Length: 253
Image 1 (cartoon, rainbow, N blue to C red):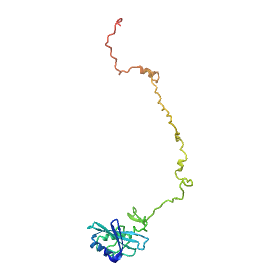
Image 2 (image 1 turned 45 degrees about the vertical axis):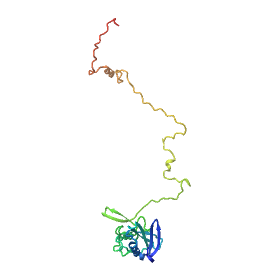
Image 3 (image 1 turned 90 degrees about the vertical axis):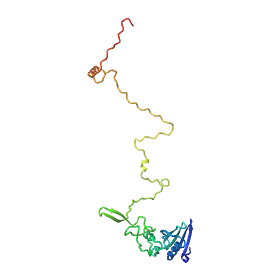
Image 4 (image 1 turned 180 degrees about the vertical axis):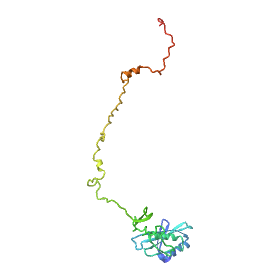
């Protein structure tokens, strides 16, 4: 790329070229990439935070060439106080993308006509993607039933004190841990484990008792009166039919 003294460094990795340019020549470098080399579309503006560097922030511009089906990345560096030139004059979509970087990293862009937060809530303090921003944030919000609105409160994450200053049980002193008492003795009445060896004899299951029965209806077991009543035939019982077979005469047999 013919950007002259704006060039700082370049890197070609897996077929994608990354070019680092000076901050004050960013707009010129982007214009050359768009008009001369055919990188028509600005796909993304991404920030990166390196707190150990003097200029801790990198701002990466991802460009796409529809003509060549290829991508390129143009990169500049800055700090908390120095603004980066806006490229909204080349790509109007950069307005929203620059607002995202400003909202999450605190990088300012000179020339952006509407540089304000776009993702975080109104009155949000800090920049969430900076490495020194706490993971829990500074405040939490909830709905207050008493006030009938959403309220902000300081983050409170109470946690019981836990002492981790001990060795593993198999490496040092035998510490008594919760639940060890269950393994010390069997509960009363618990069956003893079967000894190792051959198969054990299985005891036969107890048979149910044989019910008592009577041989004749007269033996009811309820007394003489019940026995007498049992011998009487019921009136509803059908009468036996007389046999029609003639009796054999004496002497015929």
